[in-house]
Amino acid sequence: MSHDLPIAPDATTFASLGLHDTLLKAVEGTGYTQPTSVQAAAIPAAMAGGDLMVSAATGSGKTAAFLLPALQRLVTSEKRAVPGGGPRILVLTPTRELSMQVTQACELYGRTLKWLRTASVVGGVPYGAQLRAIRGALDVLVATPGRLLDLLKSGRLDLARVEVLVLDEADRMLDMGFIDDIRAIVAATPESRQTLLFSATLDGDIAKLAGQLMSEPQRIELASHRDRHEGITQRLHWADNRNHKERLLDHLLRDPSIDQAIVFTSTQRDAERIAAQIEASGHAVAALHGGMPQSQRSRTLTGLRHRRLRVLVATDVASRGIDVPTISHVINYGMPMNSEDYVHRIGRTGRAGRTGLAVTLAEHADLHKIRGIERFTTQRIPVSTVEGLEPRLAEPSTQNRSGNPGRRGNGGGRSFSGRPHAGRDRDSRSERTTGAPQRARRP
Image (cartoon, rainbow, N blue to C red):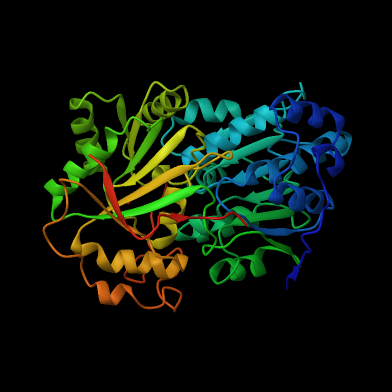
């Protein structure tokens, strides 16, 4: 049973949220003084100690919304910790990239806590270093479900000290087939734990999961898939074939207004192929996908963050968990597996108050996916053309796109065929615009 939590905290600064002075000092060091909506609502609620379900938009600051109250608990109850080994705070994330981001954020917000011990366990990394990192008592452990469950089954990790369990991107973990792993992990934690669940949606399978794992959770809903992304202009270019699509991509990447761009592909093979083509055109580029060793993925992300790369070509492994404010453009070269991934893809740009451009390159065979995205987001993606690169084929099924995009259609977290997709830590010239560019608004 859950009940709604009024979104009413009238907080203009982090200091008004009741955070400990040591944490406030760390937050001030980041340059942020005013909490986002999700932080203002979730931090006091989480510090109250009850279970919490939160839905918030990509880029809204949700990581701090669960890390700061978790660290607050460590600061204020350090002497009351249960003796033994294992973590006091456990954060589960769907991907290695998101785990890395959360771990870095924890180290950032906890840098004034000299005693803080943090570790991360994810797939694709040798066991040796991770086993050394989790030896003994831990304060915070950030993990992907598959590797964490392996450590549990082998007796290398004890979760009896867990006081706070965070399920970050819970909807994504369900999509990836981690439901049984999550249940096994939760069963190894104390029933007295506090559970904080963050998800793009709080309905359907997420609501069922919450009913099984949480005790009368409070709900904070600040976003849904229907909310527009503030500052992001969306465009759709129809392509006749792959060659036409690649010519459009080359034209788009020659735009001098690009600061940094992510080009999304549907397959790992396409990510490698397109990255090689872009590199041959003289751009600083790298590929990122689930088939790469973790060390290579880490180097690639470091290069992106340090602006050594202008273009990242990636599968949906990068649609969540990458927070680089200088990404000005997102280009969908390949269509996402489901409508919700489209929302997360374009959410990689327009971050931290900046504006961004999200361009989708689609062939006629992609029409059903475009229609699914428009039904899911209840908004039309304006069609654009590039002078000299106009499609020779007529825009497909224009009449079919003229209906109400809000009527029932493809839901989030499901493939366009309607079946959930699964897998662990893997991926499966001037312009003329038809209609005004679409801008999104933040809740």
